[in-house]
Length: 110
Image (cartoon, rainbow, N blue to C red):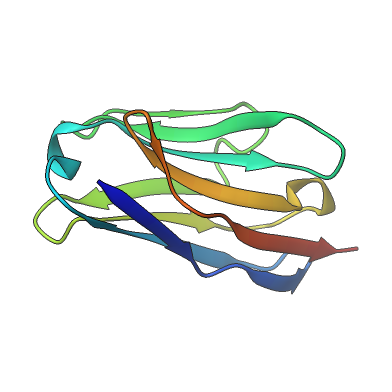
């Protein structure tokens, strides 16, 4: 599986962005999909995950603001991010199982 994330950009606090992840290759639908981020000067941290059956988890700081989804038929996943905060700034990566894609930069200005 190869993954490509897109949809990052610069947004003001309180704004929204929708990140997309396009997968190619076999097996995407069988894998747990996740979004991780790396803030400046910090380690990677999980943001949200979704199982192949659609069960989701969120880190506490994004719960209620972010929504993860997937479309196994189209080999895609998304992360809808609302009410963004400056602390959400970072490079966001989509994952499928142990595979990681290239990141997309999200910058939230105060």
